Image (cartoon, rainbow, N blue to C red; front, side):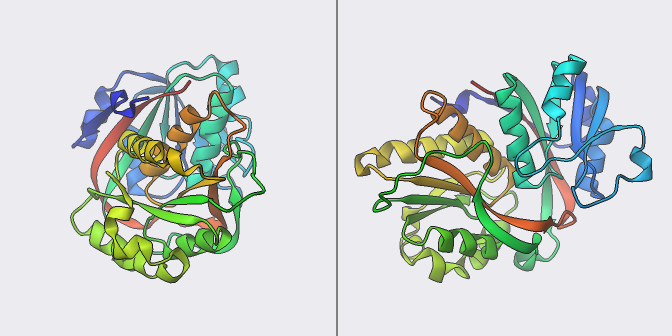
Length: 312
């Protein structure tokens, strides 16, 4: 499988999005963020459907609109509603989603038989508080992501944990502790979305060194690298790495998508395509679930991306 054949498109100006072919349905998260509002207002579509956080009241402005709440193990009936409405050309604007929301929705779309979906992502200029930016509140537990749960091998002698390492070092620490005995490898977003972000990322990740182990920091070639804004290069980098790992016969393999949403999407795509003929594989996606995910963490919009995702 060569993920480089998947198509992605870059748009440097917001008005370029208005020239896209009309979608049957545009799905977006209802959050107060310029990075979400700008593309949603421009992308041509017949219907706009909204994802609202589970702990917030439906705002007055959405009364009468199609709204859904995505939980840890359900999509709020969204994928079934799309089928019933006969929507074929679907666009999901993922900028305002939490990573667990995005992954659960992707799983249900796959299960319901959707083969092609466009994903839109607005890339930020920078994070508001640089390397000190906070992304969540109230850690609850590290758990397998619904729809991405493999079987568990009781023998854990050669477990492998691949962490897509973002800015939030607390997330990295939590998953590293949860899989304490596993060999750990970091997936970094390089090239980054902007020049300073890689340095900021490294500064934050270093704060998790005690939990992750020194191997990932003594020899940076130990780790995996893929562009932070490219899900398909991320999937390809994981594919190439895992091919090399076959000889080690790992007992359980865990993937933790803790960085950018495009990288999380790439990790999920790699999982879906790699387990399509072996759903009982001893692979799982894990995530440090929190009570609340923060949305206004960035400033400015660098560019927009459209990813043409194909599912088996």
